[in-house]
Amino acid sequence: MFPSIILRYPFKPLFRHYENKSHREGDMENAQFCRLLQLPRTGILLLSKKKLWQPVERYVQMGFKLRFCIQREIYLQAKHDMLYEQINENPSTGDTSTWVNEMQTYKTELKSLNETICNLERETHRCMSTIPDGPLKRMLCAHEEKEHWYLSKFLREECTHSGGCCGRDCGCCEKLRNDKRPLHRSHCTSMCLCCEKAREYPINVDNYEDDPMIVDVFLRGWR
Image 1: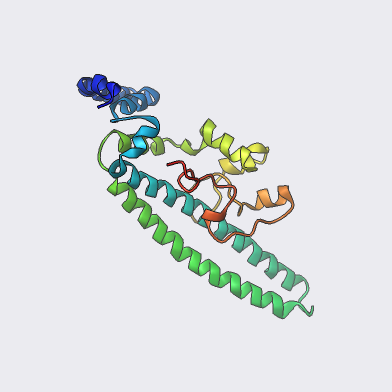
Image 2: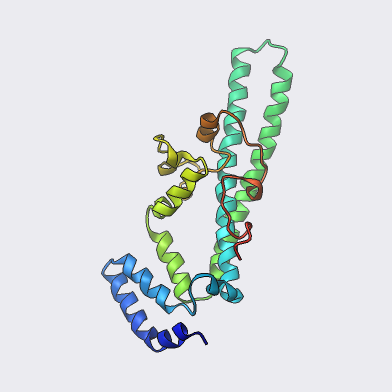
């Protein structure tokens, strides 16, 4: 065993006591620190515990997929609505049949996306339920119970460095992106219309794995 594990093991009940005490008193930062102290290992060494970490990996990646798909849904709906307005403004143009076909394609994709998002929501819940009960799961749950957890300094900086709206004054990441899905708030992907307008060109990707604006450390070979 590593020395740090040997030293911390006898104090686990004490760490749990102070975790509960801090949680009751509303000191979330200290409660999270106490949970961290209860983990068998920290840092990169923690990732070697596959039974503990793999369910977390799946859960995080479900979040990435949902983030991409929900913003793609908004993106496709906007493109569909833009064509609809063009047809209303120019009903006799020779491009009408082409626009109608494109609108139908968008409708088909939107229907498929809605089903995908519903499946991802269920899968996300299942992934959370497979994470073993313990300090790591409590850390995740406590983090996401915070109303604006996704607006942490780290995630804002990541969004900014990816070219997202946190690097501008538009405030898109602080707003609800889709009224149909009030439970989902997130930072930008390549499907963000505001980002596309700012960079002045589209990024054509069909899934989050190919999205240059999503930093998935698992896909990038961190483990």
